[in-house]
Amino acid sequence: MTAIYRSFDRAGLDAAYNNRAHTPDFQRYVDRWQAASVAARQAVPCRLDLAYGPSPRQRLDVFSPAGPAPAGGRPALLYFHGGYWQGNHKDGYSFPAPLVTGSGALYIAATYDLCPDVTMSELVEQVRTVVVWLHGNAASIGLDPRRLVVAGHSAGGHIAATLAHTDWTSYGLPAAALAGALPLSGLFDLEPIRLCYLNDACRMDAAEARRLSPIHHIGRLAPPMVLVVGAAELPELVRQTRDYAQALTRAGVAPAQVIETPGDNHFSVLDRLFDPHGPVWEELRGLIVP
Image (tube, rainbow, N blue to C red; front, top):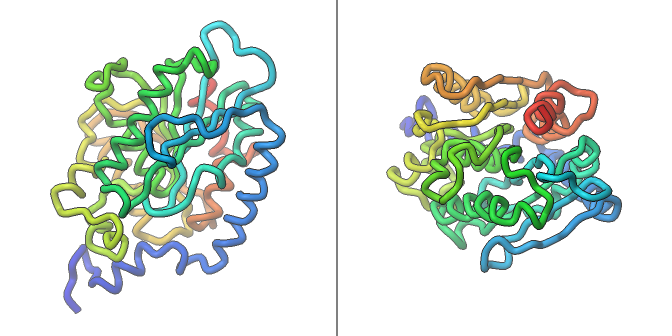
């Protein structure tokens, strides 16, 4: 056995990041989210497939509370789906809209081009464009751009953290373009991703993996953050969240709360995020509507 990352050889590292193999019944979660998403699009006022860029996947949906927006707009949750940067679509993640809009906020679900059709660097620039687009179109969608919070699951957690550490002034936005971030089961160090099967599509070299790893950009300004991971997830996913939280604490950048939800796997943990009676939603709601 030849170790290529920590104590893992290639087969071990592949297994350490294979969430579907770790949760064989994952499809039942996906099917339920998709059914609930169809119902949400029928029940909640929404504008679908707004283009923030030229490709067919550069689209976002905006779900709104009933009635006119107050002067200055509403707070919003911007959500990015997971899929290891190579799968899934926003249409399967409309289901949080009733809960979020019921709190008085907009719910915005965005999708993006996938690897290998784009590089990871191109994907990251696309999702940054979402934030730029929302700030530029805030008035037309009823958004208060000072109260935009980002969350995401898995690869979407990587995206949420990446956006939290972005220098928004270089994009013509205020430094505090985001009011908060909640990465859920995120990937914060992409080196093990580069070395396992996932890189067949992501195609990162060592330099790109480091450049796109949020854990290596802790020194940048970051908004308040809540980090969430399921306690029964793959150990590497739990370690990634713990290591990132420790790095934030050491740097004194953003006071990050860490929640490890008991018994949750990589898929059931997403249900905790939008459980109206649970502590994770309370923390997220506190970011959106402080």
